[in-house]
Image (cartoon, rainbow, N blue to C red; front, side, top):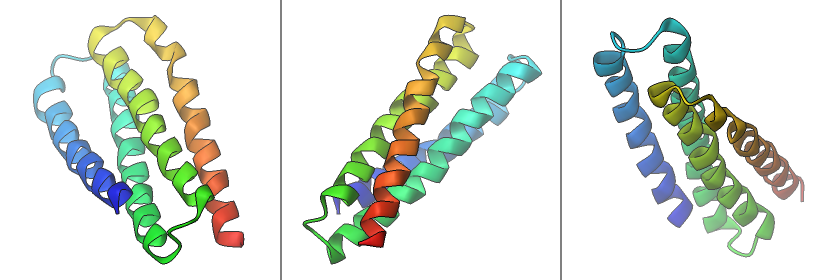
Length: 120
């Protein structure tokens, strides 16, 4: 159930960060950087919901290594993908964008694990 809890925490943070972006950063960031920020927030929410699903499914299949791997990959993906986009959009430091694809690969690998776990 830990992944479901993490999913809830990440979903809460996605809503809070989305509101922060809209109400605080909206006037401070360029339209391009606001779009980058929004992408990070959007993917965080999608994968927070995926973590909740993983947590629920692990209650039914507690020994599933593939589901556990999916959960960890989603967590790491949120931190690297969304985190790097938040940092890039706020700081403007372009090199942070180099971290984003690593998080994206974590998301993709997580979805592959998720699919394989359900296909068993």
